[in-house]
Image (cartoon, rainbow, N blue to C red; front, side, top):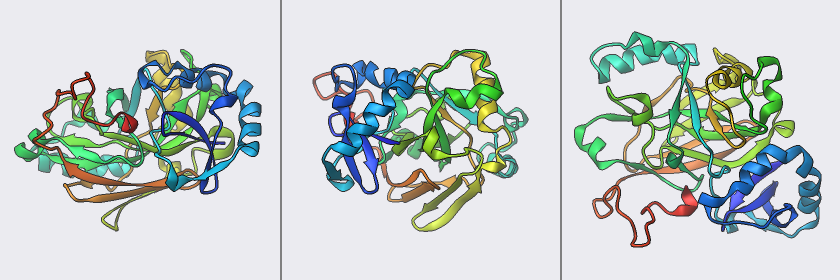
Amino acid sequence: MRLAIFDDNRLGAVIDDRVVDVTDALPWPHEPDPLLAGWWRALCRDFARLAPALRAAAQAGPARPLDSVRLAAPVLGPTKIIAAASNYREHVEEMHTVQERTLGHVESWMMDFDVFLKAPSSIVGPRAGIVLPRDVLAEGSEIHHESELVVVIGTGGKDIEAEDALSHVLGYTIGLDITVRSAADRSRRKSYDTFSPLGPWLTTADEAGDPADFDIRLTCNGEPRQTVNTSALITPVPEIVAYASRMMTLNPGDVIFTGAPPGVGPIEPGDVLHTSISGLGAMTIPVRAESAAAPRGSTDGAGRSPVPTENR
């Protein structure tokens, strides 16, 4: 299935270019507040049991055109975002040049595969924009795009064996890991609001196929930048899941970025990114500068961030 979260955090099944609301097929009341939306994590955990009812609802319900709904990120309230670093050889090679230019030297330890954490608050949906922080723009640091295959965990677990890892995966989506190139810690440089666009929907593992055979493509203003097949991953998806689970329990709904392909490059206000993964869809993301009228940390008077909640 292709599962979307749309409008008031409703659950939809995507069929061709239309979406069917299947929220009422879930065995619990709908909670639209993303901070209380444990129903999504329960869905990730129990999808195998719930799938027949969801498929029946998708066939029976009225369909709406996709362009008539507001798509949100196809995850809600993950306990963590895990990201893989240095997982394509050509990207490792290009990072030597990138770091010489942006840092003045090469951090050799960063050239080895590992995982790190990103803030879940950096997630936005496929129709939101990337907002470049004004302090980063003022200091002149480069901000780069990294288009990646993203894994969403299903049943979760600890010390998962690589041979069993894919049975713990609910499905896959497209992600952009937006990155400030500076001397700061990875988690800090990659956790600004809007720095983890996800979408346009989640394709469940049974429909998506082999995660070692996806074509990833990204263009910036129509110019090709990233083109790779996931067969080139140094550490493939099952091993990423197993490796991460040895350090931390993977919970249902957790998100794993699998690593940046080669071809990363700077983005600037006014740019438009288009990213696609074969079989998973595509999304077009505009880039803009942070407004001086909305200082970071301010709220709208009700304790909410200026970033719209539907884009989180």
